[in-house]
Length: 100
Image (cartoon, rainbow, N blue to C red):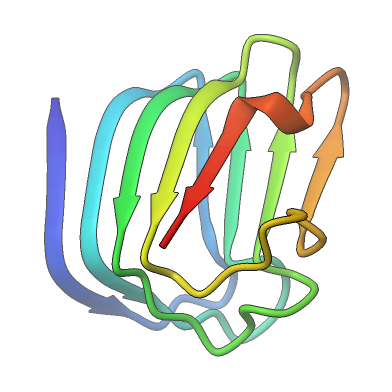
């Protein structure tokens, strides 16, 4: 398991992962200059709690790949319909669990 806690980062682009697993983000702020905040490809078992982002609307997250699963987002004020998450290359809406 990898834990990132109470972190603020302002990269040119957002956080990307490919084939990552068992990642915990707690009170993390990713403030990209452009693009999607989180991009996860064939990644699983993420727990993301109390995230902050300047773009919680339409470009919050992109999920790619059929093996992407168990992405849990808690306390980020995201829409329950997952409308600000893009699903590509076989990623399914059921891969993400959004809770208050």
